[in-house]
Image 1 (cartoon, helix red, strand yellow):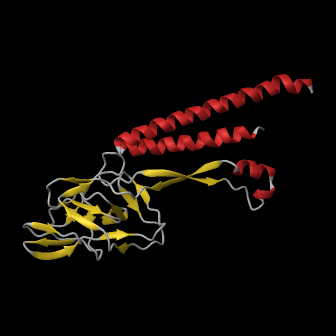
Image 2 (cartoon, rainbow, N blue to C red):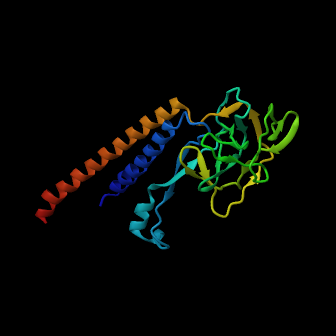
Image 3 (cartoon, rainbow, N blue to C red):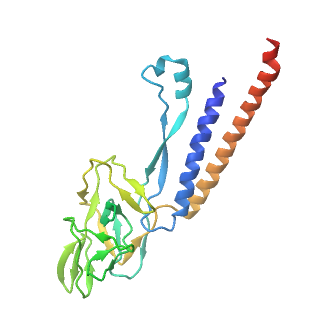
Length: 245
């Protein structure tokens, strides 16, 4: 079989999956704290002897989509005026307690629940640097760049910003919730800062996201047309050339 068929096939698979990723990024361009995803590629190894195999060499000449990785670039900070809205500048995530366990988010759209605790828009408990719920007494709230939360001049807790070791990949859960990788222990960030009265936007630009979607769609169409050409050629060989042998 012509090796060009492998190139077109792997290209179509990769562009189709990348198209799904681009669509998800564009759909969440207005979601606070959303981390855009970017595809990465790998080789399709065919066992330990792939380098000595003609088939293995043919397949490994073409990249396959290995999956998606989070883009950790900073999103724009939007002022809201709400004293309990918090935005992170730098690396790290807020730690929240959900029904499914500990999760991490950059969406700092918080408010004070009826029980006095600091919670997300979905009612999930925001945790302090010590991993405890944060009680917010009535009064004027002030949050410092280091996360220290004060009410009427007295510090009551410190909002935690947690980071992970370099190379650790969090798993998206929903639009802007993330699951820590197994065996990876988060640590407190020493370089990030909190901005009170602001929310971080998604780090996906609408215009760039639209352009990415169009490019991925056209590339997928090109690979599909290439496969059609190869398929027609194979049919010609099967119906015209092989009977002559």
